[in-house]
Amino acid sequence: MTPKKPYKEFSDFLNSIFPFKVQKISVNAGFTCPNRDGTKGVGGCTYCNNQSFSPAYGGPRRSVTEQMDEGVAFFRRKYPQMKYLAYFQSYTNTYDSLEKLIALYEEALRYPDTVGIIVGTRPDCMPNELLNYFAELKKHTFVMIEYGLESTFDPTLQFINRGHTYAQSEEAIHRTAQKGIYTGAHIILGLPGESRELMLSHVDKLSALPLTSLKLHQLQLIRGTVMAKQYEAHPEWFNLFEVDEYIDLCIDFAERLNPDFVIERFVSQSPKELLIAPDWGLKNYEFTAKILKRFAQRETYQGRLYKHCQ
Image (cartoon, rainbow, N blue to C red; front, top):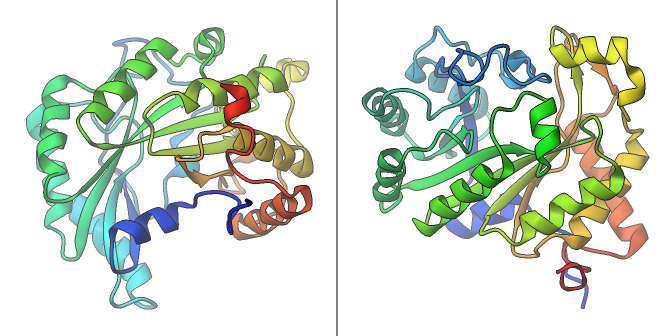
């Protein structure tokens, strides 16, 4: 029987945990990455300009508390009873000394009405000592770790200067989930050299992992990145989706996906002044309306082909 909703939404996941409305507040704690500081490489991932996913209030010179102040003020006007999750988003938020990391996380958790943290990081930057800390922390507050995988194909990871392998991604996810910690992953669809068939092969690998949630988004070319220069020199390397083409790919992806996973998002929206392409001219809620309509037109839902793909 077709479920009432065509996919498991993150809002429903949070509603199953909290008896009140919860909002993520993005925090930029001023971290770097091992493929920026020379540990593994320099220059970072070829697609990365961190301004493209950092809200204006997330400046690295502001304290965690100041950023929480600004983020909460934005939402509290409309939802005075709302609670908050501190979302450590920018760069690699587990890449520093254990003492400094814990101090920053706990500063966020002390903020009034904060009921948990979400920490974005790389799969090669989760030491066991820190994972043990998160395992203790989740006994009394919400904890989710999000790993940027971006691809399950090692040649792609090498091409985009990611600095880790897919085997490291699998290992980090297994270690985290074994601690009982909510575990998320992030994948980019449309990276150079990846065919439609290869992109759909990601979902079969991911579905076998002990994940809680998955984020998808389309490849976006951002000003000031290595990838923008590659596109200028070699546009034939890239397949930048038209919106309807991307929607059908997302639905094909969802049909094969483990139905227990939460799909946190299908799309990302970079600031217009930084975005080169694709510029669909859609707000996130407009894209969501389109994808829900297409699910209905195709009379399909998340996990419909899951068993057939295993």
